Amino acid sequence: MSNDNSASTALKLEDIGIAFQNERDAPPPEHEPSLNVDSWRLIKAPSGELHLGTLRDRQADRAVVRLTSALAWFDMSERAVTTASGRRYVLLGPPEHRPLECMAIRNGAAQLGLSGGIDISDQFWAQMQPAE
Image (cartoon, rainbow, N blue to C red; front, top):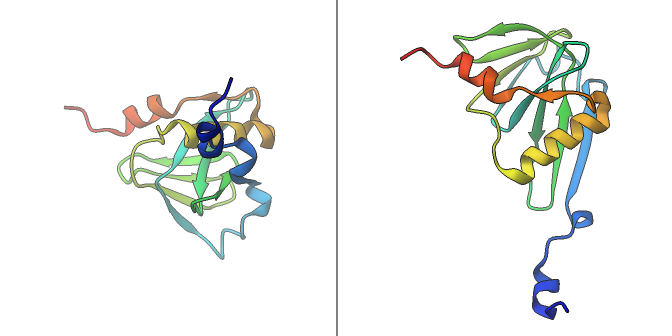
């Protein structure tokens, strides 16, 4: 038997507005050549290609998940990646670890065609860190 108070404060999945966008929905790289991202995960497709999943435009009740085209270049010293389409993403910090945000990015990647992909974010980030 449920408590009426808990039912009124529970967050329902349908109450969370998350839009899923892939590279075709993003502006052309010449209009948005570089982006700073702080909420991201790196997904390895079954083909071996790497794609960056980002959570952007976060507000209290909505966010946008964007999945990039395949990554073509990695600048480890600048903590940046460049996609095959030419857009550069500067990673402002470590991969996203908050559970809801991680779920949104991973589910977005699956919905946008990478259902067989694996998340390699933590391994990738570890390679970007300087040796101590």
